[in-house]
Length: 382
Image (cartoon, rainbow, N blue to C red):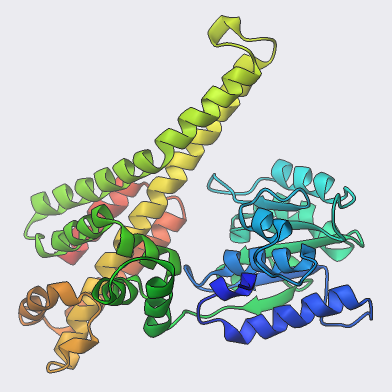
């Protein structure tokens, strides 16, 4: 099975990438291959997966067979010549980029390419982007840079103008449903439900289909939109969203953070004052990094909750405009509640509520205080 088979609804780019792989290995100097690529697409479209699949195909002797050691190690992020940088903080700093640049100059160990994948390249600070620019302009002959971002405009023009663009699109509901049926053990009803509510987000669809806790959490979040009556209920709903986001972040990160700390302590042969020289600073740096990672996870979880709430108001608007076509709504498990709510308000008011959610998401992306942002949002929604 090819490494590209994991890309759902992206047939239009698979041809582009396979042609580039063939050109890279033919040695003909074809323009199909270049050293700097920018993968863009909406959240969940699989832009990082596409970049990783491309990297695997480049180092694989069979152009991405999906079964050999090279393919499996690239896909599991353990290949010696492929570095996958996934920022844990809110931004990618210049020092981190300089370290990547230094390692990118190393000669390949087992293949013909040294490949660096930067996920969330939209998080590059200005100084980090400037540090990366010269390398993107004049890369080593054996190095390939693969950057990933939601849109072209999220990446500085100086960077994106020097990269080959790969534009992914949101997979259709049917494509996501087929993917879930083929890749998981869920039944058709669950696959259809997860594909519909995920809105083409592959990772979210898989998580929703296979995790009962995620399904319950989503339903609770949507119920908060129905509970808004006064300022008190608005403030309680805001606090509950934040609590859910924090609990989810803790459950996702706690085990990994504990393992990272233990590995660091083992490396420095002890804990506290028993550590060898440099251990205390290393632990402090790790704790700082973990705190930054937790902050980002909380904000990402809040954003996901706001997307769920946005789908609720989207469904309300659909019900108001297309009253008899309830099959068009996303949250089919709440169709009766949506129909009832739609009858209590106007489409003009629903559009205002959708705008309020989008504004809150924008403010969060600009590092606004989460609780204050949520309180203001829910007061605007009631």
